[in-house]
Amino acid sequence: MSEPTKAQTLSAAGDGGPPRRGIPGLGSLGGVGEMRHLGLLGALALLVVVGLVTRPENFATASNLVSILSLAATIGVITVGATFVIIGGGIDLSVGAVMALASVWATTVATQSYGPVVMAICAMLVGTGAGLVTGLLIAYGRLVPFIATLAMLVAARGLAQRMSDRKTQIIDADNTALVELSTSRVLGIPLLVYIFALVVVLGWVVLNRTTFGRRTYAVGGNPEAARLAGIDVRRHTMLLYALSGLCCGIAAILIMARTTTGSSTHGDLYELDAIAAVIIGGTLLTGGRGTIMGSILGLLIFTLITNLFILNGLNTSDQLIAKGLIIVAAVLLQRRNLKERSP
Image (cartoon, rainbow, N blue to C red; front, side, top):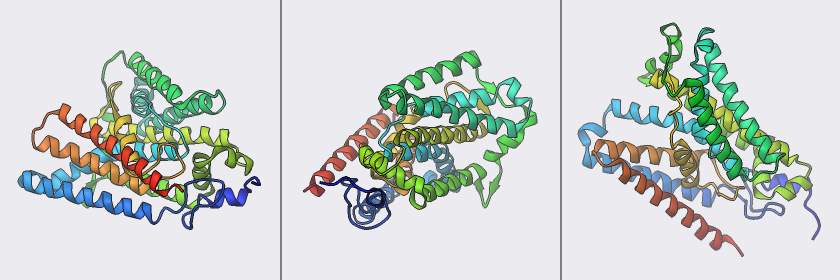
């Protein structure tokens, strides 16, 4: 069999058409993808019905809707970055810790003295820098993504604790412009939700309408074929983790606005929710297939589950068990679909 050409490899990662040679099993994001989206929408509708039946006086309120969207916004921004990484064939376990580190660094006395704009820029630079280090270790240091991101998780959380002396850092009254992202509302919705929506739109455009997005599908679907097609796989992998880090920095801004603090405890288990949302949304753990929209629908399902558990006064441990079962079911469903589609 002849080697795949660049056109064959990149066309395999396009938006339509049947699977093409070079990236086995990728194919169209219509068909199966659209059916999965309909299934996710059905699951969301079912959760809404449960909320209306069990707690109609609390669930169907404007304040609860705002609460759901605000909670989804922070994890959602991280989920966008995680979607890129997993489609590209990687995994990032460090997102929660990197977000915590970015929030701590941005709320130190020295950083706050420069004002809210510098604080926001600092958070994004710290997140991007951490992601870049992880990407370098994976792409050029040849470390397994699981090990590299696990090491970053431990190191980032430890550095955040060291910088803050394990204390919560309060945002100064002079920097209330940052806090207003959570308190100011447009059409009754906090500004941070609009920031989340903007990140989702930009992520969708980059993934579906740019060369970077097509290369992400190609690298995740078949790295060797992508390399033979002329794609610098190592550099692209490094950039994917830098992008994930940038999303962690933006999420740090949102959580600082919500809590008015920077803390080494921020983002605890956020990596679980982000990765689970991506998997439930239909992104293959092996890479090469997935959508931003699917990940966001998966995120909303998890956020609604959390909200329903809180409203019904159910135990947090039961909530974690339920999430674990959902993750297992989603992975088993993926394997079943792959077997049915394989020749």
